[in-house]
Length: 390
Image: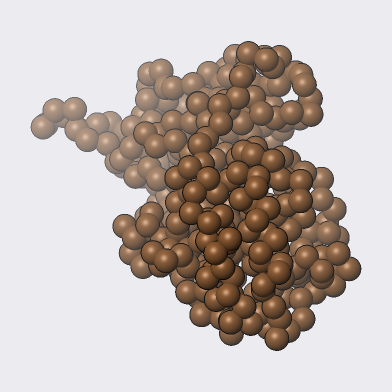
């Protein structure tokens, strides 16, 4: 499947409208701080500032990153960065990921090769960062020497081809250059992240807004989400998706999230789907490591139970991956094992999947207003009634 095909690989739920949250009902603070470049780098290195590699992969080329570095060296203003303070000395990047990663790569004197960025995303998801052995592997990274055009035909840019270690007298100026950071904090209510979700939605930049799932993965990062990231790389899962590489906007992880959310909280589903998934994602931050490990094993047993199925079993009539079919089958197959904290035993009957997809009530529930409570309930009920293990 080519990169241009990916956007057409799954079935869109066109009746799902994104929610806007009434921010004025929340008590928020936004405090300006001028951290210098060296401090920001140390924040990233220590993990105080978190830039999830799965939020959005690094997209800048070396010329654009070089222009940012040049601006910092000579003291030109650069756009401010927005951080969300989730706890003391713990910040999530709302807006500014590309700028911060450019600084991080420049100081490390390494620049990610374009053809390796999808693979690097997998490395980041697996390790929670980029290990030193990968950072210094020329297969993944090239030297980060500034690529800056001449100001005039016979007047070369004095910073062109320099790197962090060869900046000379300019190195100190670069290290100490302040960048305005706006730190957003939700004071109250403490148990509701809705306003912060909307701030993510409004403030992210770069020409294309983050998807709802990309925002979730920044706002609700946890061991549970790390498990979803690992599960998303499984070959048997990618076979069912009929997509070799992870989706750049994390739709495949959203499908996994929906499956687990319907399994564990489907009986309490209330529209909208976005709020439902946000709430479950927040719950995921408090799932114990033991339960997270169990859910990962349960998913593995489900994939084995589906190993005799053709990938088309989870596709719609338009031959796109259908999350409504997947989540219904997943919840149906895993409900009893989940109740008894066991694993799925047996193989999913292909005939029962066909019976589900041809069922009149199920078909009605996936054709319109798919996120309505009654439609979701109908899908889950029909899947539990029809899907069988052989």
